[in-house]
Length: 206
Ligand code: PRP
Ligand code: URA
Image (cartoon, rainbow, N blue to C red):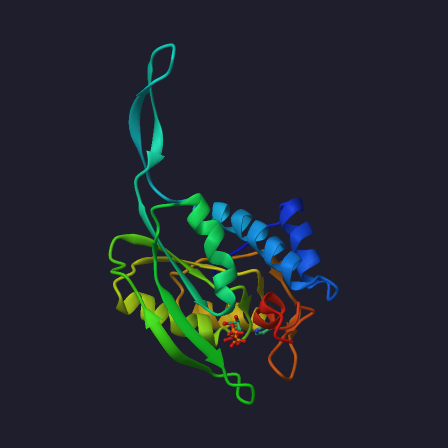
């Protein structure tokens, strides 16, 4: 299992405000964006660089620039909250979308949409804020691999131990980056303490 807990104080500050039930959708979206920036910086620590020579006002010098091409795939709908910060950090990123929805009774994810670019050779970030049972993430990563992705990172806001175990067993090659590693799932398969339904809090559909 490769789980990276981003424990930077600023990340933990945003996470606490996301958890707060009094945080309204406009601030929720802002905190989600800032927290994703911190998560993505960590999740892309391994991207490859190449040396490039530039001229400073003083003299030529060589320094690293990004060599990897990147892809980002948010899982609709909640994962959309995490896309804008990736676009801000990596303007050349290729973007795909996967629509998955959990059945409220069974908690099984059902795919209702997919549009993916060619992912071969691209370091691919799978974006979904909540890793609960892990079913949605495992299914999404299966589609990413079918579209050619060989190097994938899962970026989530909060994970439950059950979801991390399920995803790690299904896709042991995929590291998971989170800001919160919570206690457990409740009987409705919601993360405890969690933050409730991320998509509903993001879009005011409670
Ligand atoms: C949420 C969340 C994940 C999924 C996690 O989506 O955004 O996609 O549940 O649960 P899992 O790990 O048990 O599969 P939801 O189905 O509520 O859809 P939404 O994003 O459209 O609100
Ligand atoms: N999806 C959410 O939005 N929240 C949870 O706690 C679990 C799944």
